[in-house]
Image (cartoon, rainbow, N blue to C red; front, side, top):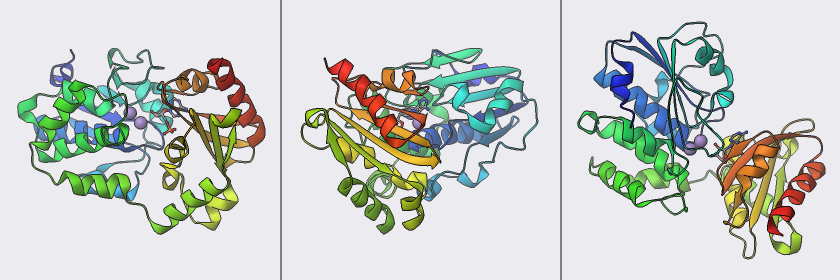
Length: 315
Ligand code: AMP
Ligand code: MN
Ligand code: MN
C-alpha cells in the first residue's frame, strides 16, 4: 500500500486537487491531504486547487485556503489527484500535466490510474477511505479526521450504500474517536436543505415521469427553473437519489441544463443495472450504482438514448 509521506519525501512543492463541481468526498479527501501535509510536512509548499465548494463545507478547517486553478502556471514537484481521473480535474489538469511526479488516489471503477503512482480501489466506499489508508495514523488530528469523515458520509449516503464494507466502518470508527460532533456534521452537510433547495426538489419530483414499466424515473431542471429558484448546480444534490427511492424504480435519471442543448446527467441504480457502463458510453463514468456524464442535444434525445441502454441491460 502507498504511504503518502514516503512518496513526497524531500519534495519542495505539492499541488492537491480533485474533480470539477466537487462533492463531499472530493472536498473532504483533498482537504484532509492538504491539512495533513501542512501539519506534518510544513517544509513543503502545499497548495489546494478546486472549484469553490458549497458553503456547507465551511465547517472544514482552512477551507478558505482553496485556490482557483485557472491562472496557475507553475511546475510542482508533485501533483496529487484525488477522487477522479486526470480528465475530470478541469482547470487543474494543466497543473497535473506540468508536475514532475503525479499521484492518483481514486475509487471510480472507470479510472484505471493516471498517475506515476496510483492507489485505485473501485471497492472502496470513497476516496476519503483510501486517503485514510495512505496517511500515518499517529499524524492525524481532529480536523483531518473530520474532513475524512465528511467525505465518507457523503459518498456512502451516511453509511448506507452497498459500497460500505467492514473496512469502511472500521475506518469511520477510528475517525469518530477524535470526538467531533458527528450528528451535527451529518445534519448540516448531508440532510439540511435551504428552503429553495427543498422547493426545487419538490418541483423536480412533481415534474418527474416514469418509463419502462415504472423501472426508470426521470426528471430535469432547466436553466429557466434554476434562475427562477435562484439555485446553483450543488443545490440540486440529492434529487437523483430521491427519484430512486420510488418503489419499483431500478434506475433514476436526473438532468440539469448546463447550456443550450447541453445537460449534466446523474444516474442512480439499485443493483440490476450497471450505470457506470452507461455513463462511460456517453463520455462520463462513475460507479455501478452511481454515475454521471454530460450530454449534448435535446433533453428527450438524451433520455431516450439512456433509456435504450437501460432497457438493453434489463433484458
Ligand atoms: P453525480 O451524479 O454527479 O453525483 O455522480 C455520480 C458518480 O459518478 C460520482 O462518483 C461521480 O464522481 C461520477 N461521475 C459523475 N460525472 C462523471 C463524469 N462526467 N465522468 C466520470 N465520472 C463521473
Ligand atoms: Mn466525487
Ligand atoms: Mn468519491
